[in-house]
Length: 315
Ligand code: CP
Ligand code: NVA
Image (cartoon, rainbow, N blue to C red):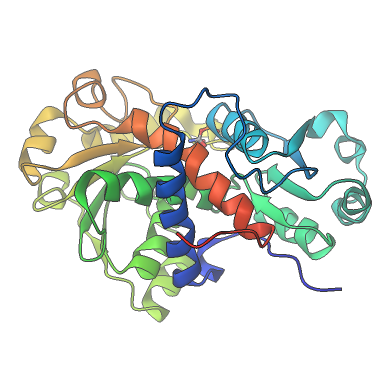
């Protein structure tokens, strides 16, 4: 049995392959301009393939973009919530992987435990894609780099400033991407909301250009993009009040945006909470690129799907 091409974590990925996917995503986005949303692409390369979408947590963008993307590529999907599968009644994830491998052609899963995702992949003879775990959100970063480059050109050498909760999945995937595409990742967070030691060690071992700047005003100085995310990620709901109080100084405001580079863009994976991690004036303002960023989930994930099925064309 050949090892399937899983897409689990950017840390494990080859930068050349990530670059190839992003270039194809850009090309496919242009090719679809003017086409109706529902129609398949000119070359429906995944015709006859079935993608299982397993979501143990809620999702709008990831779920819908995978579903639409698979259809545009000529394939079909099956949406499965954890609680409707025997998985929700305690069936082993390893057994689930072995069984689903007999029925469908690929699986994407949103589950909090990264170990569980890895166990599913180890026991599946088909590609498994990480649709978000507590540890990482690699699909988001494919769209984020694509969006950055659409707006500002090659991300190599850029300075990306992250404000707020730097102990979450999206922040970790930004750190991974900083290594793959050689940019500076500057994190600014309240004490107790920084990356895990595992992420810090990975960054040190891999010579990531990682900067930790606790003062948010200093952190945005010279930034090409200012990025934030919810202060309360999936699975972090226990200490909402404390998080809001501690992270309040890291809210992205007009004043902070004005201290970044004049052409800096504001990014957010969404869902957003106006008045919390950023003001409404920032996310709804002229520097915000969040709607293109959300749309690019579709184009980038189509490229991820094509890669998983070994069908990624040349860009
Ligand atoms: N950004 C993102 O993953 O959004 P969803 O939770 O809606 O999928
Ligand atoms: N960090 C967020 C991302 C949501 C897409 C969360 O885990 O809830």
